[in-house]
Every structure is written in structure tokens, then in C-alpha cells.
Length: 359
Image 1 (cartoon, rainbow, N blue to C red):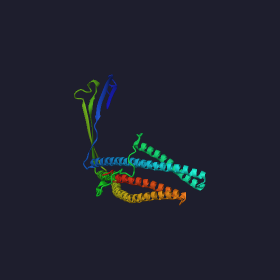
Image 2 (image 1 turned 180 degrees about the horizontal axis):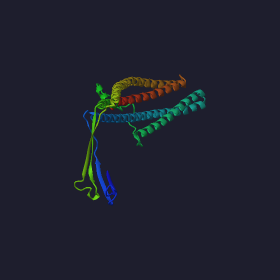
Image 3 (image 1 turned 120 degrees about the vertical axis):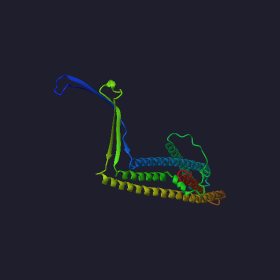
Image 4 (image 1 turned 90 degrees about the vertical axis):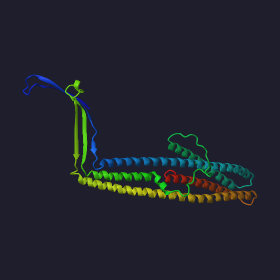
């Protein structure tokens, strides 16, 4: 800071003798205030701030892992919808061909109007399913654009869901991987910060000594402001003794201890949540593997049933309702198989997320 001053005054206290001009000019730098950390308060506050910074960074990593997992899940959903749309298109094409043949037979009087209408209902159902899948594909692509924060290039077709898309977790993976979970690390850093806050709160019970100072130059003449011998300095130590605030500081310690206990509970909760999510993901994967195997057998059986029903209808042994029912059940089973394979892959992504992003 800089300051300049100019005065006019009388030559003597009685007011006689004329007037004189006087001046004063200062250039001063105020030094930073320092506190003598005799009782560790500043060190504790510094440690608390550092641990809170680490906790914030752990939260950032958690957000990043969540984003990666959501992108993967949305892409897998897009793959599943593409397969479901292709199945619906294939079924619709077959229905359109069969409906044309059935219409010719109806015109010839060999089939009833009920059989023709039943086939048309199944054809319209496949058409509605196809439109729904295409709409969901566009919505999923919009979600990917939102997650990526910008436009996307044309997505590669990639592998189908019945192929290996994601690596399986190796047997014997250590539970210590849970320590990599960002939420556990964040809770731990918050707990460390709470411990440091206790030290800072306790130090408030003791006197604090702060040092302030300033240095600069001072002269009555601006031309001699920076001449030799015009330097000035000031040094002022200050002591603060908590005589009347001791009770308040004691309650502040109790509040900080309570926050520490809350931090311990949150830390334990984060660990328990990690174990539960991993256990749920592993159980889900195991259950889905069994359901996929059973549904694959069901799809094979439904395919055989459809072939037999078609053959019996062509030989005049059964009505076309048997063919329609078998075809619809075959279509439903194949759609269910795609959904289960999607759930299996999503479960793998969730397991990677539960393990802190992989291993």
C-alpha cells in the first residue's frame, strides 16, 4: 500500500510567525500473519483439509466409474434391442409371407375367416413389437449421446449377446479389491479428516500466538522516499487466551467427536454395501447362467414344436391354430433369451463396478 500526505500549519503554537508546509509519504508491505503452532492446531487443520481433498477426489473417481458402467450398459442395451428388432423383422417377414398364402386359401374357400384373422393378429403384433424396438433403439442412442457429452460416430455392430462380450471374474479374487471402491476410500478419508478435526478442536482450548509484521519506507519528502535511512518496519506478536470461550470449545470438541462417530458408521456402511453388492452380483450371475441354459433348451424345444405343428398342419392333421400358438411361443422364448443374455452382461458390468472398476 502507498500513501501520501501534505499539510499546512502555523509556525508556533500562538499562531504567529507565518505558516509552514509539511508532508509524509509511506510505502508499506503488510506481511502475512503467522501462527505459532505450539499445540498442533494448524497441523491438524492442514491434515483435515488434505484428507477432505482426497475424499473429494475419491468421489470424482466414483462418478467416473459410474459413467463408464452406464455407457457400457447402454451400449449392451442397444445391442440387445438390435437383436430383438431383427428377430421381430424376421418374424414379421415370415408372417407376411404366410398371410399371403393364407389369403389365397381363404379366397379359394379352403380356410376359414377365423384362421385368416388369427394370422393377421399375429402379424400385427410382430409389426407393433418391431416399431417399439426401433423407438427404444433411438432412445438408447440418445442416452449414449448424453453420456458421451457429444455426437457419436456410427456404432459398430460388434458381437451378438450370445458371444463373449465381457471377461469373467477369475476364481479366487481377493476381497481386498473392495478397498479400491471409491465410496469406501471416500468414507475413509472423511474419517481421517474427522480425526484431524478433533485435534484442531482440542487445540482451541490452549492459547494461540500469532505474529504480524510490516516493512516499507517512509519520508517527509517524496524525492527522498527510497533514500538510505528511510526504511521502516513494525512487528506485533499477539496472544489469544480462551478464558471466556473455554466452554464453547469443549462443546465444539464433543460435536467433532460425534461427527467422527458418524464417520465411523458411514465407513462401516460403505464396506458392508460393497460386500453386499459384490455378493448380489455374483448370485445374479450364477442364477442368470442357469436361467439362460434352461431358456436355450426351451428355445430348442419350441423350435421343434413349431416344426412339428407346421408339418401336421400341412398334412391336414391339425388346424392352423396349433401352428400359430407354437410360432408365438417360439418367438416369445427367443425374445426372453435375448433379455436374459442382456441381463447377464449387465450383471458383469455391475460386478466390475462393485469391485471398484475391475481388478
